Amino acid sequence: MLDHRLTEQRNPRSKRIDLLSALEITDLINSEDQTVAPAVAREREAIARAMELAADAVRRGGRLIYVGAGTSGRLGVLDASEMPPTFGTDPEMVRGVIAGGQEALVRAQEGAEDVPENGAAAVDELKVGSSDFVLGIATSGTTPFVHGALVRARELGARTGFLLCTPPPPELVQEHDVVIAPLVGPEVITGSTRMKAGTATKLVLNTITTGAMVLLGKVYGNLMVDLKVTARKLQDRGERILMETLGVDRARARELLEEGDGNVKCAIVMGRLGVDRDEAQRLLEEAEGLVARVVGDLL
Picture 1: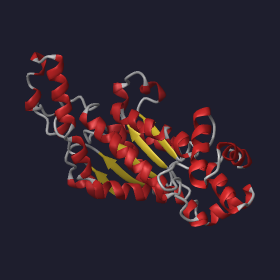
Picture 2: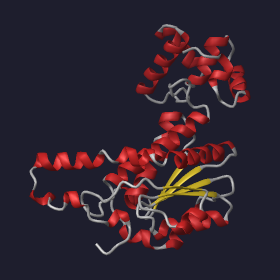
Picture 3: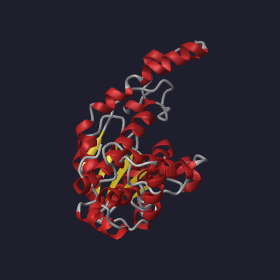
């Protein structure tokens, strides 16, 4: 394909995919997908570093900000949007920026990614500063919008990272605090990075944010105790968490949630220590949000 980027190479195993049956296409795509998780695993140290950078940014009052275009941008926005309902975070804590703006989430804005100044402008609009961690996502490693955003973020003192699915050039590694490069190989359909590269991207982003939330005390055991009760599903989940951690019945769990203003972490501390909501919140703040430091191991 006359292109050095791994994401643009032709996959020899799928060269005649157009002659296969539906079942054969399914098997071929599935066999290629088996290579994604091992590629992500090989980047474990870089992913852990990004996780630490994200958690540290939040502790310092900053944010984790994803910047991408096309599929990469959509995956960043998706991961960011899932943080408030899952972990009860402020929507500003994890932000997703996509070239072309909100319209690009549902309708491709291909030309929007070609202007680095637009990426810089997006960073300025978010008022990025030295407390933030900005992670650029571009599976090809070359998207101008992303590079423009990261250059501007570094100028403003933010720490930066890059996630791509092609071997990173040495200068890219030197420029950023972390570079994550899961090499999943050529796509089944040449250049269709919504496939293996997209899957790898989602795995990496899920790991970074989930791990960062664990480090920040949003999880007790493996329970997402920092959720806020804002829907029937979350009310049920909150009650079940209290029933499991405190050994109470559903009626008592419901009472504790009401007394804790829908905050599961507060309700756990209140139920365990017999304190009111204000005291529970104070104890949690002293413990940096870590429930285990306040009530011990109830699991």
